[in-house]
Image 1 (cartoon, each protein chain N blue to C red):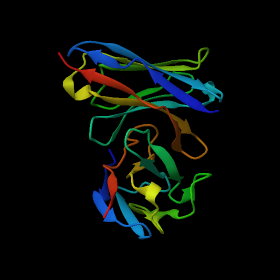
Image 2 (tube, rainbow over the protein chains, first blue to last red):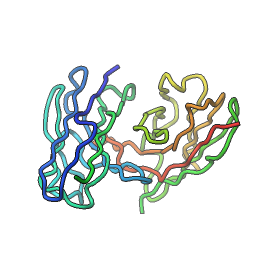
Image 3 (cartoon, rainbow over the protein chains, first blue to last red):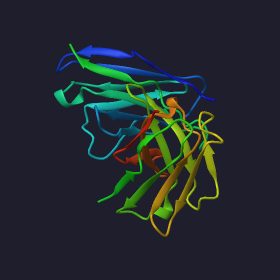
Image 4 (cartoon, rainbow over the protein chains, first blue to last red):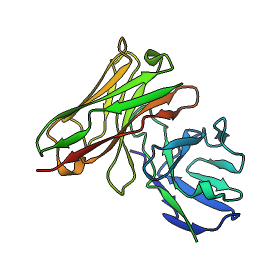
Length: 109
Length: 119
């Protein structure tokens, strides 16, 4: 099975900061990488799919990049509504091992 | 409005059973593969089960294989998850999620239903 790791697990930041979260896969997963945002008590929400494609309606301050086994989610200027937990997910081998990363919690500094 | 609404969660004793439902609306349910994802209190997301559009193909994570059964009724726009031989570690919020084939991602999620396993 493909394993995902995320770093850092926790991130303290301030409004306006540039934030970068890294997701690493145990083997090559091509373009099948998505990012989700989850706020407390809420369901996850798809932000980015296919590594770098922003879901319609998601603010352009969010961006994704990467290839192979290393991927990043970047928030160019953190906004108050962005404090949340972010998960990556690989969808490389249908449907087995559509695993999620362990998450990165973005907290206020 | 495209929507998934789960129900069926509750308190169940260890070893007990429960059936979760997920009713879809606002889209052609039979066109989409569907999934269940769970989240234990304070923990991350765990992908546990998937079902193809016609219900023929199913997938289970090792943690639930042999105890949980996924199914769907396309005539009722409903996804199910039968939970059996429940353990304390199955206690979680259970989400249903739609797979978007075009984007290969989980683009629509339900609000979740809580399953508590306790004596």
